[in-house]
Length: 476
Figure 1: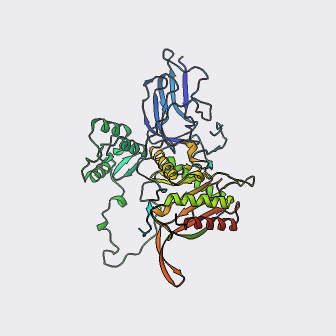
Figure 2 (figure 1 turned 30 degrees about the horizontal axis):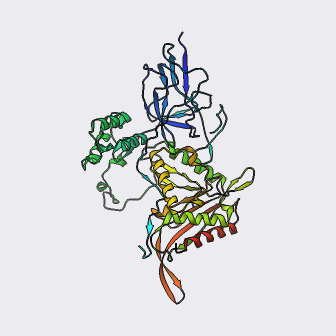
Figure 3 (figure 1 turned 90 degrees about the horizontal axis):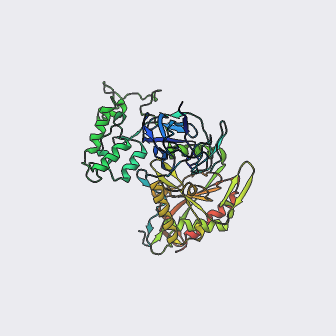
């Protein structure tokens, strides 16, 4: 009787409990050789091509594109072929899962969709212009983007492709389209309900039928109509013409409003990847931290010439950290221990369509403005390409969220343990300021400082904030 081998999903080096199937490179009944690509999986940080651990016939696959597979659960089952190359007993490639299974080969990160980095400050002118292998029933801890307990199980969860702009496609497929410079709105989907698959995108790139820049203006609308036709009748709330809705009844009298019913009008979508991890981490942070927020305005009226706002913010944080080290620290709530750091590694919040990344700007306290900008651009590019190492998404000592580049003056940013503090920079404004002898209009930046009150006192936080504001108020 031929030997059979069950391949469990390994820990892909992300410290996360699951991954999403993007595309199988084989089907049941195919023969695959050792280290040939078996499947493409999406985690919170990358799209990883997982190679086959054996040579043989594929007997069973765990699911279809879009399904979520738990780390350590069955990914594929093979019938070994002794006439083909096999990996020597005990040979490994460095990645492990809870069952002590096989390793994973090379990673080929693919970029995600449009990325907007909240660390992009722009310029202003003076004239105002590896976790240990998990065992069955044991808890796994997250060593990825942020710190927090992760839930795990042996389930495989089904997930739907997301419809954006009338196109149904998985985020990883959109990322591949961007990488290959394919206009996904012009790609004909061959998947279920007209979903655009990875193969569709690769074929379009090969034959040049959907190059970016050549799409007709009505392409998105045509695609939306096609997707609706392929998927059957769309929910009434999604297809009803707005002009047909009215606040009046047939008799011309205002209609009484009613609370929403038990039936959802939208399509539920299971969170995955970055957003899935973000949901877990935010919940853990809410349960573990005692947050308190102080707010004030930095007066930038004295700035001379062109200034890099992000570089100035980072310099000000480093100055404040030297003045009050208690906020450039980690806190362990279980052992009630505090670790104050001699260096300043700033976690820069980067917003993407799939969720939040927080890469670490290492040794920010020894970088000049040019070094800060160069490092941030590198981190942004790595996030965009989904090539950033997991080690660069953890271990920062304090965080910065420059949410004001979009909107908002003040906020209560979330402190993610073990960090003690996070600085939020709001939208710049022109404010009327009282001065001796009259009033003036000054350019000001709202600053929000949220800190874990278990680890720092209100006085320490206030002194930190004052040092930060004082540095931002310097001419240059």
